[in-house]
Image 1 (cartoon, rainbow over the protein chains, first blue to last red):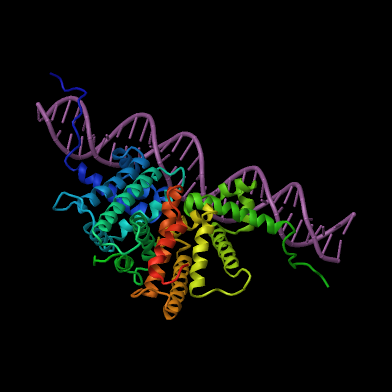
Image 2 (cartoon, chains in turn cyan, orange, blue, yellow; image 1 turned 30 degrees about the horizontal axis):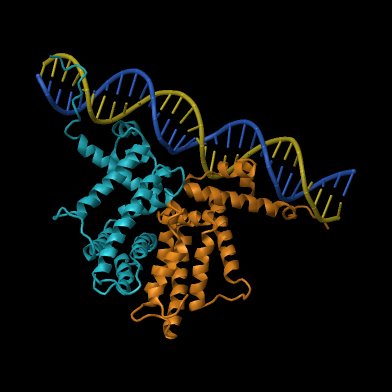
Length: 204
Length: 204
DNA sequence: ACAAAAAGCGAGCACCTAGTAGGTTTTCGC
DNA sequence: GCGAAAACCTACTAGGTGCTCGCTTTTTGT
C-alpha cells in the first residue's frame, strides 16, 4: 500500500520553533502594535527569514490570532491550576488580584493586552471581535461572582454586581497604561485592592 | 528701507487650512494610531497632496504634537469656561463626570486618547513623554481635590485621596476601551458615578 | 501692478511592507 | 540509505512610507 500523498506531520523541533516565533511575535506586537509590527522584525528575533515565519503561520492575521490564543491558553492554565475548576465569588476576586500581581512580573504580556485592545477598537481591526467577546464574557463572569457575593452578604450596601464587575475590569486596564508609563510610581495590585475594599464586607 | 528677507506671515485662509489638517489628522491617528496612520491618508481627507500637508507641518511627529496640543487647548477651554479658574474639591469631580458625559458625544476624541496613550507606552514612542507628564499632573491635581474633600468630611472613612484619584483616572481610561468596543452596553458616565458613590458622603 | 513670499503640487528617493514562487537543505519513516 | 515531505531560503511582486527638491500657482503688502 503506497504512502504517496499522505502527510507526515511536523518534525520534532517544529513545536519549539513555533513557540519561539510566537514569543517573538508577542514581543513585537507588544512594543509596536499589530499594524506597525512587522513579520520581518519577528523573523529577525528568531534568526530566520520572513518567508520562514510565513511557512509556519500562513498570514500575519493568523499569527496574531495564535498569539492571542496562546495567551488565553496560558491564562486558562493559570486559572484552573490544581483544581480544574474556575472559582466563583470571593475566590474569583482573589484570583483576579493574584493575576494583577502576576502581571507586574510580565510587562510584555501587559503591554500586548494594552496596545492590542486599544488598537482593536478600530472597526476594521482583525482582533476587534476577539476583544468584544473577551470583555463580554469577562464582565459577565466577574459580575456573576459579585452577584454570588451579594447573596452571601459579602458586598457593601448599594453595590451593584454588574457595575462593580465592569468597573473592576476597566480599572485593571486603565492602571496598566499608567503602570507601563511609570512603573515605579504605580502598584497595580495595591490600587486594585484599594478599589475593592470599600465595596466588600470581607477582606480579599 | 528695504523689506527684502522679511517674512510676511501666513495668509488669511491658512489658519483654517491648518485646522482642517489637524481635524483630519485626529481622525486618522484615532482610527489607525500614529505609527500606522499615514500623512497621505490625512492629505486625502483634506483634498490636498502629501507634500502640501508637510508644508504646514514639517514632520509627522510635529503633526502629532500639534494634534495633542490642540486637544489640550480645547480641554483647557472647556475646563475654565466662564470662571477662568480651575475648580477644586467636589466641583472638580463634578467637572470630571461632566467631561465623561461630554466624551460620549465625541468618540473620535476618545479613540485618539485611547489608541495613542496605549501606543505611547512603547519606550521609543514620540508621545511617551507627553503622556507621562499628562498622567502625572492629572493624578496629582485630582488627588489634591480628593484631599480637599477629605478635609471637608466629604470622603467616606478610609478613602485615600491619591489612590482614589489614580483609580478614578484609570477607571475612566479603562471604560473607554469597553465603550469603544460596545457603545450600546456601556455608559461611561453611569459607571463613573457608580464608582464614586461609595467613596463620598455627598452626591456628585 | 508688481515682486516677493506663501501655498501647493508632481516626481522621486531610499526604504519598508505582506505575501508568493520556486528552489535547496534538513529531517525522518520506511 | 533512499525518497518524500517538512523546513527554510533567495528573489520577487506590488504596494506603501516619510520626506525632499524644484517647480507652478495664489495671495498679499506696497
